[in-house]
Amino acid sequence: MKLTVPERFILLGILPPEGNFVTLRVVRDLYKNLSFKEEEIKDYKIKIGMDNGVSTANWDQKKGSVEKEIEIGEMATQIIVDQLKKLDTEKKLKPTMFTVYEKFVENGGK
Image 1 (cartoon, rainbow, N blue to C red):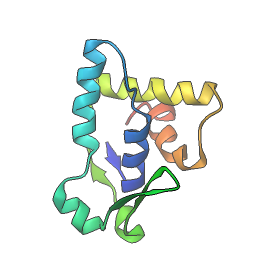
Image 2 (image 1 turned 90 degrees about the horizontal axis):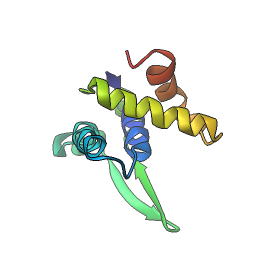
Image 3 (image 1 turned 90 degrees about the vertical axis):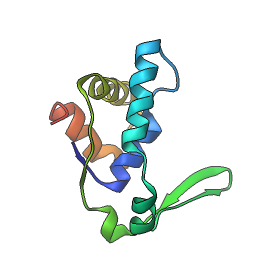
């Protein structure tokens, strides 16, 4: 799946914090795949911080729009789809999640 920097941050932020053993194992691997390597942190100029108790992330906007191929398996895709559908049902989707929702829910993770 090709994802941009902001899409990767969005996915990292919506993964379930709990579940059964299989779900947790898949989520752990997904965190590893979505997370940024040291080289990417330097290249994209990623800065993580806090602002009034809220975690923030900033990056080079031009480089951050470039898509990178991220390995996401079938079970991981289903976990993401379920989380996005749950947010949709609860009316908690945000405008920044639009492309992620399209890629995973509307296009079936393709």
